Amino acid sequence: MERPDWKERWAGLFFVAPFLLLFALFMLWPIVSGLWNSFFNTSLAGVKHEFLGLQNWQDLFGDPAVWSSLKNTLVFTAMSTPPLVIVALAMALLANRKGLLGWLLRFSYFAPFVLPATVVTLIWVWIYQPGFGLVNGLLTAGGFAEIDWLNTENRAMLAVVITTVWWTVGFNFLLYLAALQGIPAQIYEAAAIDGAGGRQQLFRITLPLLRRTTGLIVVLQLVASLKIFDQIYLMTDGGPNYATRPIIQYIYETGFTSYRIGYASAISYLFFAIIVIVALAQFKLFSGREETA
Image (cartoon, rainbow, N blue to C red; front, side):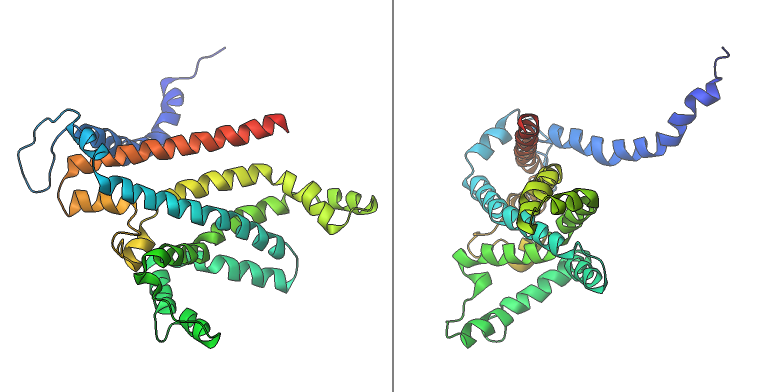
């Protein structure tokens, strides 16, 4: 058998070389550089670059701002993930139909997702405004007092969560809709012949067959919620009194406002480790359920 010449053997590498180069430049090098900087007092202010060992890591464990911002991130994740999964499933079930109504539902459900963060936050800041905002207008029309949503500590996070659900639920909706359209119609026809009603088909056929999709959506949503930054930074700037400041905003402020790149890198790696642990735990949980099902 004739062996392929060197051009054929290396042709594949030549095709993927541009991607590998960009991946190494923009993904691998920042990861290695960030870990390296976490052991130094690297600063944007131009101070002398000195080796600190584990000092940055020791400092972050005694920094209350790290734990308060991390707590805000976890609270946002816990508040936003369930509605972003459940609402997306309900929307997909409603839109999984033929005809003009199905098309209109799909378009209206997914449309907010294509809007940029600045537009979304501008819309919702106006909606939450006291005096002329839509939400407070509905409250006063119902006989309730107005609420300064974005400047009240125990209301600001809820306001951001509602904004996030409206803005990003379209992505999860799209995943659920694709999974629903992949279920063969013959299964429902056979179930209907056997006398199964709509509720039985939903709980005995649809939801079990969507288990893998649900696991994927939960993992993706947890990671996305943990990375919250844009809407909080634009709507509340972490306020009031740091009640909504997420860990990524604190990392940004530490690195680019206080110029402590080394310390910000150490906090980033702590947060990275938490995201990896959460993702692995979710995969383990859902893979275990698949094996026992």
